[in-house]
Amino acid sequence: MDYEREITNLRTENKIMSEKIDFLEFRLELLAEGSNVSALLFECNVTRSQYLKIMDLMDEQRAKIDKGERVNNTDFETRIAEITSKRDYHFAELVAKAFMEDGRWDEVFPALYGGM
Image 1: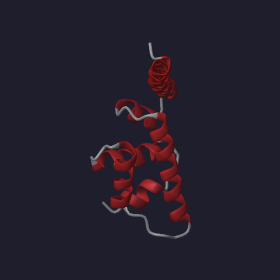
Image 2 (image 1 turned 180 degrees about the vertical axis):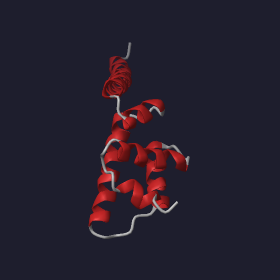
Image 3 (image 1 turned 90 degrees about the vertical axis):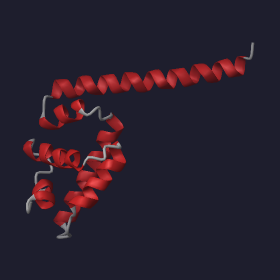
Image 4 (image 1 turned 60 degrees about the vertical axis):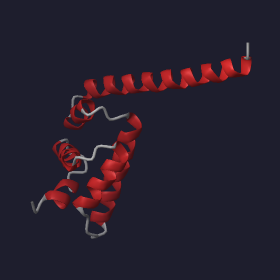
């Protein structure tokens, strides 16, 4: 028996199981939170790492708005698609709107979609 190959296989399986456990734990946290954002993320199977990147993007959008820079919904939608692999621009709009409804980054949605 090739022990090194077996150890490599076990490490791979362990990593896969750890990722699945993290995903399930995150989904339970979303259910317990009960916010608009958490319901959307749960429904769309967004992972914890994707959620953290989305929050970073929301911070970036807020920083641009605070500096008086123009934000663009097309750029925002592209970035959301890169993070989540969801190419539907409606998803990005729903994310920004859900955060606004929850009182988080509430200036971002009107800046991106207010004129529509």
